[in-house]
Length: 81
Image (cartoon, helix red, strand yellow):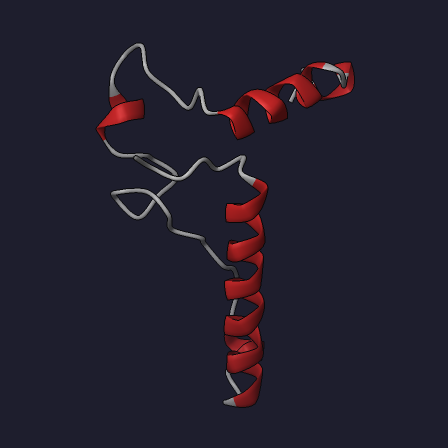
């Protein structure tokens, strides 16, 4: 089973890790040399999940993703993005 990118627990864990990493870069004097951060969470180091969402008809149908999708549906201004 893979993480759901809509999971509040997973997002909080990623925020904590990224914050700690940024603080580390500041401590060692490399923070001002960073252009961007790419959170790599999928099997290929991208936002691609294992074989489950690479299959034609599969995706993330977990409860966190359904909840996030319902929230998105309530915001018509985000549909055009």
